[in-house]
Each structure stands twice: as structure tokens, then as C-alpha cells.
Amino acid sequence: MTMAGPAIQAWRVLTFVWTHPANRRHRWRSLARACRFQVRGRLGRPTVTTIGQRARMRVWLHDTAAAKVIYANPPDWNEMWAWRRCLCPGDLFIDVGSNAGSYALWAAEAGAEVVAIEPSGTAVATLRANVALNPFPITVRQCALSAVPGQMWLTRGQGAKNHLLSASSVDAEAEPVDVNTLDNLLGDRTAAGVKIDVEGAERLVLEGARRALAERRISVLQIEWNAMSERVLGESREPIADLLAEHGYHLARPDRRGVLRPVSAAPSSSDDIFAIAPH
Figure 1 (cartoon, rainbow, N blue to C red):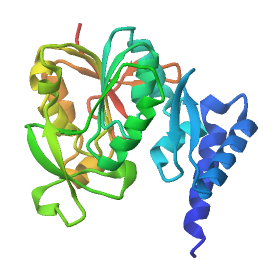
Figure 2 (tube, rainbow, N blue to C red; figure 1 turned 180 degrees about the horizontal axis):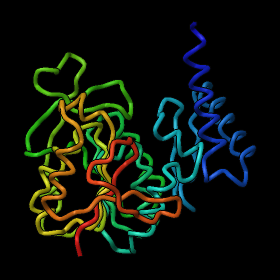
Figure 3 (cartoon, rainbow, N blue to C red; figure 1 turned 135 degrees about the vertical axis):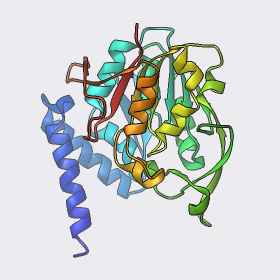
Figure 4 (cartoon, rainbow, N blue to C red; figure 1 turned 180 degrees about the vertical axis):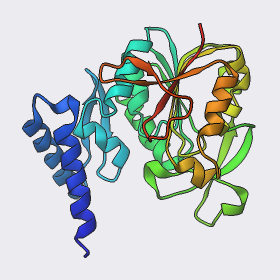
């Protein structure tokens, strides 16, 4: 019984590595790299790996989201190649919920100016360390984004699954975090891309970007699209679809070549959604 959890996790990692499109030409080499990472991690040592062609990240075993970069480059194949199609040198890219910085580094390597937003004290320390390994123009802001500025509470100890809490859910383990809005952050600038991965509170981020959305100063958004919104906000993803439709954005998902393909108004699967501003 005690071995079931680790065994299942190991099987998931092996399956991810073996089936990932980034590894199709060198599966055995990728499995060996994953095994070396696991061994080093159990000895308390991080692994420095590459994302993209030359961006570097330091990954610890307990950083489950960052570990995906060890297992495949790039880990979110369809989504990350979509950004390589969308971003041009000099574009502004905002990474909301940056965690260890894989998307921030990926976009910066493409030539974008990046603002990486991360509220967790533990995660932002990792993010800053990874940014320091590279020569890219990445600005790190330690805060959360929501509908209005102020202060909120964030869970601790859940790694990439840390999320904002309602006032009624705050406990002794929660971490107070400063909150800003995407409209405040952008000012009058235009963002070519915004990635929002905040474990269920994505609608709150969009509520705080209504001016930018109305003025179409965000060209493309990537939004986490899973059941976490039911846990955090007690709602489905329908309100996000409605808010985006209100401002004329249409929904899409990237294929294996990173081409954004239109989808229905409120898809039910858990893959991230892209929203594209009207021309």
C-alpha cells in the first residue's frame, strides 16, 4: 500500500517522457536524463537544464512543475510552440503565475520583454534564481493579480498548486500576499501575450483587466482551463468564456504545430484555452 503512490507517480513520469513529442527521436536518452535527475534529487542536488535553445533553469526534485522541463523541452509542447508563433522580438509578454519561470524564459528567448508575476515567497525565490541564470530582460513582480488591488491569502506547501483563498477559507498556514490588477500593471501599454495560470482564480485576473480587454490591448491570452475554479471560486469556466466573448475575443487551442484552432465557446476538457483579440 505504501509503495502504490510512488509507483504510480513513477509510471506517470515514464509515460510522460516516453510519449512526449519533444522526445520522439531520443526516447531512451530522455528516460536516462529523467533517471539522473531523480537520483540527483534524492541526493539533495538540483539539476541545471535547458529550456528552448539556450535558456537555463535550476530544477529541484520537489519542484514538480519545473521538473517537466527535465522530462521534455518544451514541456507544454502545443502551447509553447503557439507562443513562438505569436511573439516577436520586442513584444511584451506577461506571465501571471510564473512559478519557476519556464514560460517567462521561453518567451524571453524568443525576444519578448517579459514581466513574470508570482505571489508565493518560495516560488518567487526560485523564479528570481532562474532569471539570474540568464541574460534576458525579465522583470519579476512578487504579487497576485485579481479584480481589485489590496491583499489576499495564498495557500502554502502545495508547490505549483498553491492558490488564493477566500476570506472564509484562510487558515494558520496561509501566506498574505499583495494584490494588483492587470490593468494597473499594463497601464497604457499593449501586451502581445498574457499567460494566466493561477489555479482557479483566472476569472479574477481577467476582471482586473477589463480596460485592457475592452481596448484590445492584449492580443493573445493563454488561460488555465480545469476544475480548480469550482474549488476556488465555486464556479465553472463559463463566466470566463462569457467575459471574453463580451469583449469580442474568440477561443482557440493550439495543435501540435502551435497553430491556434478555433474551439466552441466553453469546452469541457482540461487543456489550456487561448483567447484571441478581434482584428
